[in-house]
Amino acid sequence: MSAEAIRRGLWQSRQVVVLGDGARWIWAIADQKFFGAIQIVDIYHASEHLHKLLTYLSSSSDELKSKWPIWRELLQNGQVQQLISQAVQALPSYRNTDRGNHIETEINYFLENIKRMQYDLFKQKGLFIGSGVIEAGCKSVIGKRLKQSGMFWSLRGANAIIALRCYEVSDRFDDYWDSRAS
Image (cartoon, rainbow, N blue to C red):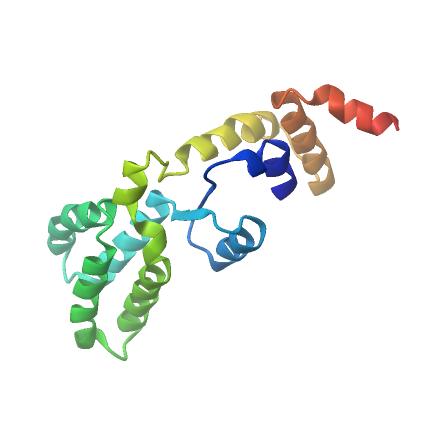
């Protein structure tokens, strides 16, 4: 990944962004391979965690439905600290229960990623906050080739086809064959 980023001009970039789902291992790679990059948690993954949190905090589906648009707007506006504060206020009534443990897990997700969820600032800078474009690219580049009707792949075969497909859509197919000839 870092080799491809360098090939595409990483060192000439004024700004580097790493967009991920919030998993710790992603940020460890980002810190190691893309030191100083702006790190952004994908808004859709953050929204999934917010929905889980609200589900655990709500006593009814009506309460969940009424809070969801308000909390989602707070998230989209980068007001994550407010979300955390409201969730922490409700936590004591669930302390030492399975529900409380789930609430704490979700609160920790937001605490660990608060700087990566400054969506208002990221949008002001014109940065993507969602990975939908990337995921759509993967679907059209990889899924289109590997997931056709009646196809079954070994891991080795799938990896080989993925490599060829990536070379093809990157206009580097000749580079691939040139590297194989030597």
